[in-house]
Each structure stands twice: as C-alpha cells, then as structure tokens.
Image 1: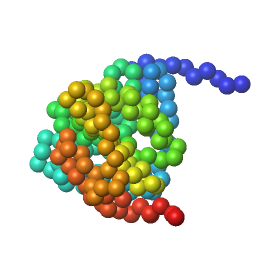
Image 2 (image 1 turned 45 degrees about the vertical axis):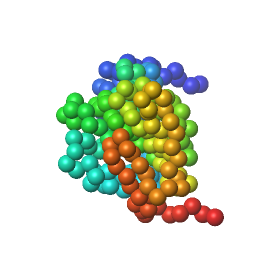
Image 3 (image 1 turned 45 degrees about the horizontal axis):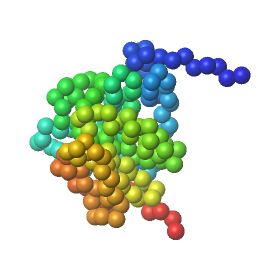
Length: 187
C-alpha cells in the first residue's frame, strides 16, 4: 500500500530541505528528489561555468551552478544546472535566487521531459528571465528560447552552429568548449 505524501508549504519545505543530505525540488506542495548526474552532465556544467564566468568577469552578472536554489513565486523552488543573474538582490543572497537572466538545464534521458515541460513552463513566470537554454550532451544539441519585446518565447537551435550564444548576457561559447571532455555520440 502506498502512503500518501504530506504536502508542504514553501516555508516547511525550506526548513526540511536545509536538513537533507541530497537536493530536492519543490513544486506546488510536492517534493521531488534530484537524480545524480552522469560524467557528461558534469563536464558540460563545469565547462559552461568556467567559460561563462570568464566572460562575465568585470560585469555586474555572475554564474551559479546546480547547488543554488531558484524560487519561482510562492510555489516552486528548483536547482537549475546553471543560471546567470545580474540582479543586486540575487548577488547578495546566501540561499535563494529569484531573478536570473538566463537559466541553463543540461539534459539527461531521465530529466529531459521534466526540464522541457514543467520546469520551462514554471521558469517562464520569472519576469527577469530573458533566455532558457537546454544542452543535451548525448546528442550534442543546444536549444535556446529567448523572450522578445512582445513577451513571446522564440526558439533558437544552436546545435549546428559554431557557438552557444546567450545575447542577454553578451556571452558566446564555442560548441567544442561546451562539449569538451564529452564523448561524441556513437554511430
């Protein structure tokens, strides 16, 4: 017999989460355990963190990796793989970010539906968010979504280009650097 999971409010989740050894995301009262990443995932996160940090040096923006919480309204807290924020409040927080300019999710077979669907739909509610970028290390694909002046999200496929471009933060990373250390797809 399955036991019903007790629903939490965001304050209860934060108190509980801060005591947990593993990361858990929160969405509308439910808690979801984060799955451990693979080597390719770690390589891409590390590569992007390094390249973006280098390009953001001397700007008011900073890149943060998967250990940082991003709160969307009062009903969601996620751990994006990477995010860049230029917001003064975010840059002084110790725990919870609320106003990223760009969010990056590195896909895996077990998370890509969640990242493309629920997470992206939730992230779009952030008024500060200008870009959402998905990186698939296994297929070596990079897909971006950019918010335009009419508040519409436009799709950009960067998979066959030379670079991953994030114009909202004036950064561009060659695909060879994004996928450095990741084995090419078989076949």
